[in-house]
Amino acid sequence: MILRILAEAEAEIEAARCSLNRQSRTLGSRFLDDLAERLAAIAENPLRFPKLETLPGDQPYRRALLTAFRYAVVFEVHDNTIVVVAVAHTSRAPNYWLER
Image (tube, rainbow, N blue to C red; front, side, top):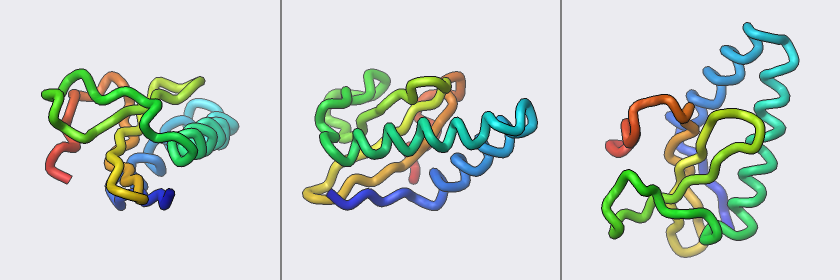
């Protein structure tokens, strides 16, 4: 599967890394490691992750929670491509990324 990350999601990743580094200089890299592991799991078997419960059942979006951080990877699957539309802190307003 091809994994594609939207520019907005890339910006969210960088913002999260910077924010975590302000708390502790090692947190940002730990976040990126956790994210990389989750992205690898998504690429391996994207359908194992649940559809978003905050959307009607016909929406294609799924989410994968990070292991150590309160972030979710929101993605959709198209044939052989996985599109990451958001890497969102779980306390953010749900579905803010729908217009992407």
